Length: 567
Image (tube, rainbow, N blue to C red; front, side, top):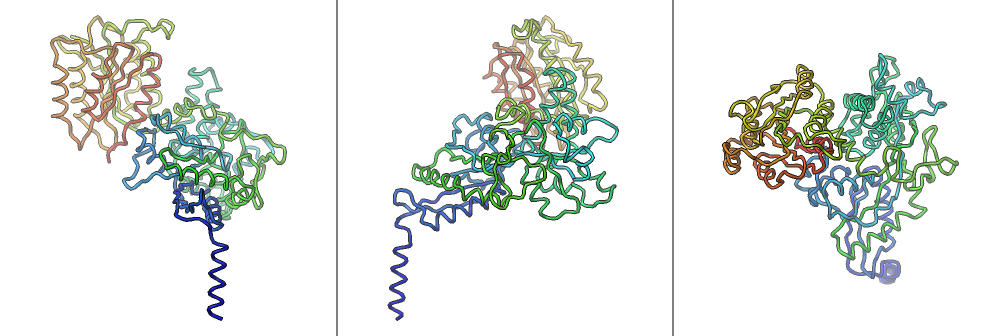
């Protein structure tokens, strides 16, 4: 009997087991909330005999925070993402990546990963981005009967004696936070014409309000919502935050004392769309296996697996067991949802996303900076794309707008430079490096009074003096930097040479107290090679605005991409 039973089992295994040989091991990194559904579907597929071309397939699904994978991919492909730190030394990029949003793929591409071209990228799930509010707070603003807009939220968080206490998960590291930021800044822009003082003031007010209660991780932000029905606790707790619908459902499933309401504001923000991205560089057999896995994740049965994780299918419908928040729109009920990956605040517009992340990074970090502005004679030249404004006027305007984003924790000084600006000296101090809390007015006044001279470009002597000035009272916990604007090459026959400047920077550079040098070249007459040679020795970077009207954008990008301050 034993022989018969053993023989029967062997025969069953031969019939029921996979008719494949070898093994293709596919690695998948998925956002934590969707990872269980992806793993369950992949495990079932493997158990059913997953194979491609007669070769068996194994799938390893890892729950991975999108920001961590993005850092690893950025490091591999030479991209720089505002607000995203360096990848850990042990980080390994997967074969397939399922982040929570296509914005990660777009940010990598626009951040310098020109060769980054993931295959597929189609959505396998969806979660709308909502504004989460404690139910008593939501009731006061009209929920669930009143349909609110982002402009209503903007007014609530920036005006009145007791503005609504709003928070956000760091939008440079969280896709739902980024979606909320895009919608709120779009609402601010609607308060006036683009770039107008009203629109800019509203945007800065919104950024300041959100930054006060920002968190680096979602769980920390969720913990700030009131945990008691006591009116004092509700008043002192967090009142609103942009989160995913899945976040709200998961939070309420814990039976908190104060449940969260999910407000679906108009216009609808960019939803989380969970793209299935096959990363470049994987072997052809793995790519084939990945395509079959994608097909597994787009079957009707996968929709029910998503529902178990409080996620929708890509078209916005939900599967069996999904418990929708009150007021949740569904295409099945006739509601109209924005297309996956498209939203109210620019959708997947790389310019809008880059502008939002850059502006946020600048407005919410702290630093110590000496701004040095070229006032040589060539700065009198008119800029064709700026309605005849001179290079000097365009540069001063860019610096003034940048100044408005910096909060009072910054320390900023201001110099100008040309040749022989003060006797034989090429630079002149207008405002010393002091906290903006005490010298913002002086900076604005002196900036407004800057005029070009008749001198040449005394670049090298000025750079060395500025570097030494920032070194003098180096401040820990902040990025100490020199930001210099110039429209020409060094033209000081009586000054030091480039080689002497670079050698001197090497000698005085202190790794324990680094000073970062950023040079922004203006127009077509600057030498990028010359600027790169200088900044390379000073932990910095050179940027060139061939169109001077883009100086403001480049200035903010340069500040936003600085390394984190040493601690």
